[in-house]
View 1 (cartoon, rainbow, N blue to C red):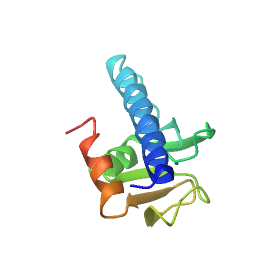
View 2 (view 1 turned 30 degrees about the vertical axis):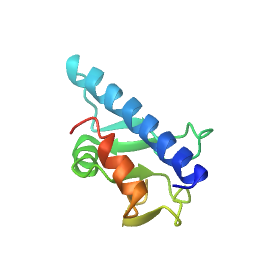
View 3 (view 1 turned 90 degrees about the vertical axis):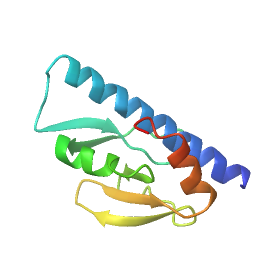
View 4 (view 1 turned 60 degrees about the vertical axis):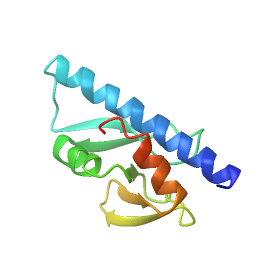
Length: 110
């Protein structure tokens, strides 16, 4: 895997893990809003922008270990494909091969 692709993947995995902890804390304290703020799961290590995602949308994205949510314009076509476009965010799927394998092997729900 190219060094850049590996770094992008690791950044996305880190942001996914942070978002999983945010959801876990929200669930633990039974604090749920119709939409919650999560961190954009793009590959840009300096991105800390927030994405408004409903619990249902979040769970739909999490149903596949190779799917991540990113702000529009934050997708990286060389390592992922946009599979769903909403006004607030896009859902991207890691391309087959090493990017998808890394995402699946590091899925906190597997």
